[in-house]
Image (cartoon, rainbow, N blue to C red):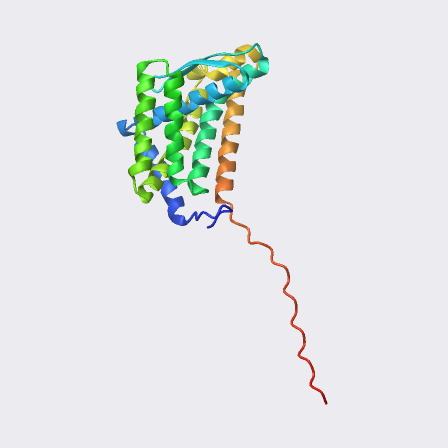
Length: 248
């Protein structure tokens, strides 16, 4: 299958994506996947930070913990809409990041730039906003690892790394929604609960809205990724002229 960008999305890549999702589920509790889980937690907190800056606020610090928790401390203007945007940007931000990674990996030929941009993002988050030594060490260490991968790995290995990161980030974002928003005990301390306090809309409603938006976003990104290239419409060829008659 050739996408509109010209990239080949063959059965091998799609099978690899499904395989990596299966591996992520099968080895979910493996310590080997712990750094990737922290990576998606940082995507979540980056969503909050980016939204805070977008609405005119400022970011004080971002924290992640070894227990896969995260926190973004920011100052926001006195704006109801701004608070709604910032509180919503965590779960939707991690989903958007996973969708963008999926599209960049499968649809476009962004083999090494994907790892380079991820490295720059993590390095910037660490230097600018890390609120403790653990967060700083994780951001800079993972940034260095991704940069080395982009520099040293062969093309096939870079493709495999990108596919696995795309599959796992999407999977973790969806699991994060399920575990945080549909478990009543956890939801009581989630972003949905914070929004419920300022909007009077129940946290369960916010959970449903964010889950629906995330599923639609993932579905749209997959549909866009796998859309076939349309063949250009060719004009009708002129009919050949009848052969001329010889003189009698």
